[in-house]
Amino acid sequence: MTMLRLFIAFLEVGAFAFGGGYAVLPLIERVIVHRYGWLTITEMTDVVSISQVTPGPIALNAATFVGMRVAGIPGAVIASVATVLPQAILLFLFGIFFFREKRSATIEHAFMSLRPGVAGLIAASTVSIFIASAFLSTSPVVMDPLVLVALAVVLILRIRRANIFPLVFLGAGIGLIGGLVEYLTQT
Image 1 (tube, helix red, strand yellow):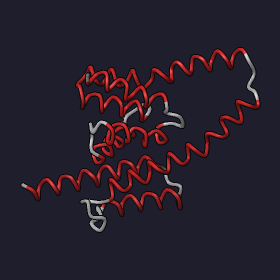
Image 2: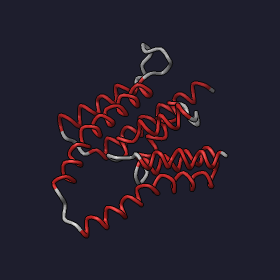
Image 3: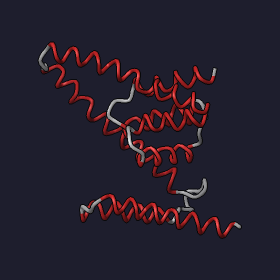
């Protein structure tokens, strides 16, 4: 039964994953965290973080991690296949249509109308992830000091248009040092 639920959940995610990885995050959160309770919002934020630094689409990586968590390797395979199945079928059908017919104005307008919705989905996932990772407790006044690092990175990227890779490694290093300090103070 768990495998069937896992397949249906990620089939839904794959079927409605328009706009790329960031746009599908609210849907993944709603299905995985709120509907099935397989992860907490904090764990979901961790999955998103891991999915961003591993190669491949965010939705597929998240499906693999969640499937592994819920049902081991078979769950990871089921969730991954369910995520890509609807898109593979649609891509195949669109490929046939586009190679037979030229792009029409109707198709162009349909794609244009999807853009504002995708932008809204990306904004919603950004706010959700920020709130989940910014606060140390359920109280909105206890903020994680690493949020200042995140805000500094955003400012550096917006003002200086710096290379993102050194900033990612810097953030990972700061996170590792913070985790080590926390571990050492607890023992």
